[in-house]
Length: 155
Length: 147
Image 1 (cartoon, rainbow over the protein chains, first blue to last red):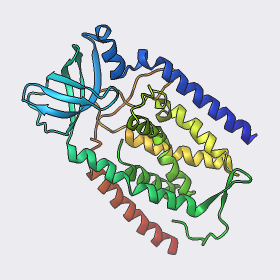
Image 2: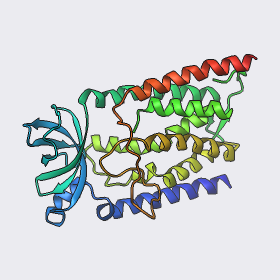
Image 3: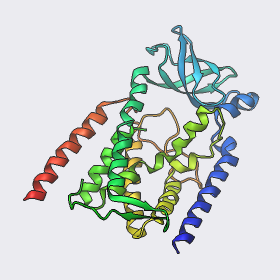
Image 4: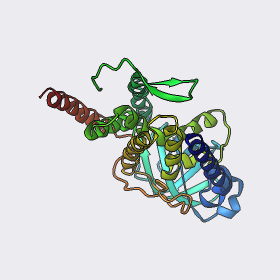
């Protein structure tokens, strides 16, 4: 029964992932597809995130944080923004081929963005400790089993 | 996403509050971020093209939890605890600010993302607050378990 459940789960996951892979371009296009089909998206609203390469007060040059990792110019509602090199900027705007006219932006400062990863690191050993303190994997039965030497104290 | 420490702390507090197996709730709190395997592909400059995106949707997480729960003797309990942890993950993710998109709650039936837009993922005070609450919980549980 459990093998059937596991096989069913994996099958459903693969189905969902394949569906996402096939329909992604039409339903939720990424920048690689948008830039490859620039005429199709000209004048349409898009959103993406990029890191600031340069900023001159009226236009910002962003390195896109997803494939094709290219450079794109953003103008529009950024005039009052305080941007510095390395800051992460989420942009919602109108695509004009190599230029996006921003309608809305959201900025995460460079050091705050880096801090997200440093803040995440302690979680990994903590989760591993909590989990493997209680469970061990039995490779013969292919199953997690409770460790026998439980002290009775629960973390 | 809030950082993993915030997610794990929220999972730990939830697990302690419901008095069940904390280890599975905490593991569940990171379950939706299995899709971060995408980062490996990004690093290798391989365009996975949305293949892993469903892993960060409720339906995808249910199937991941179902698969993992099948590896436990008490698979039903394991599934409920993993899903409880995953729920805390989505609950926290809901509050993040994005210019567009959000959690695709009804994928694969709808690709629309939902978001409350309240807190920046760069806001480290959320982590400090969560850790503070967890420490308070730890001592409160210690006191109550002695009583």
